[in-house]
Length: 380
Image 1 (cartoon, rainbow, N blue to C red):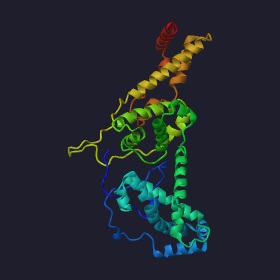
Image 2 (image 1 turned 90 degrees about the horizontal axis):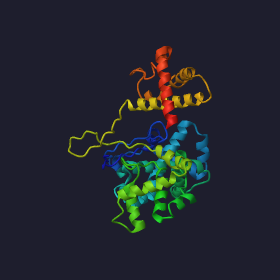
Image 3 (image 1 turned 180 degrees about the horizontal axis):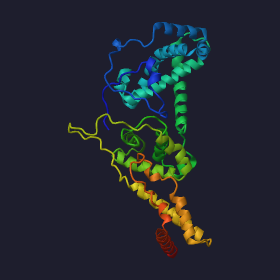
Image 4 (image 1 turned 180 degrees about the vertical axis):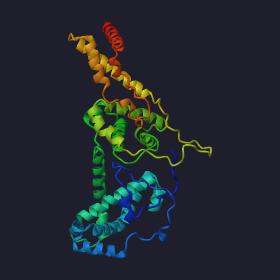
């Protein structure tokens, strides 16, 4: 998976709410990695008058009240003004510190240097604080910037937990006692299991990998002191150990691991699959046999039909009548094996099955074949 090293253009507040959509919605927001214009060349997205009015309403303690009762145009203008005030505070007081802790020194240099995924997290935090300001500024606020800075952690943490809840992930990942016991209360495996529960509930991806094994390998070295043995391959095996323990409670695993993990946005390659520059290109997905699904579905229907006929024979019913009735019932419904194909794009695999029952000779051969299969199964 290719990664862009270039800075990402910052989306201004006038566009952020129309460009970005929830990852659970019909289309996730996309960012185009390219060099951003110098900060001095970027004009403010909002007229100064809107910001002045925002400060006046905040000082009077009427901001939340006015926003709640505002017409869409006025609400949009005030929201844009809040965004203009909020984003520098979020970056200076929260994002920069987080990026430095992650070792993303380039991202910590400025908003226009944020990589795509870091920019996505930054926008999530900004939107969370904007919503918090609009909802809670119902008392006089004399110093708007200081008041916002004091609410950063509470607003962003609460929004983060809400987003996790919307994905179906645990809002505050904690390991249940049965899982800790299954993992032998091993300190590193418990930390790794917590990492798994955290990872499935966030928007980020690990390139073309399912898990951020490189990062977890570094963490493993810190936990165990075994730096030489802490490589992604070892961690991948330990992740499977953790997942195997989680799968022992299938309903819990499906609810808190599989479902939120499936809500992640699939990574998109930033370079074409065919690369003439000599570098290793992304490998295309291996295509399966288009008829394999049809064959599997036909075998499943045949097994279902034989089982139904065997049960009814045990009740003493007449063989020919049973066979005709079951085949019409099982093979006459919708066929799932061709759902991935365009309509009328090929022959219907079941087109002649039920029609063959009208021919006495064909029906006799089918009855004899079914009797033979059932006799072999009973003998086995």
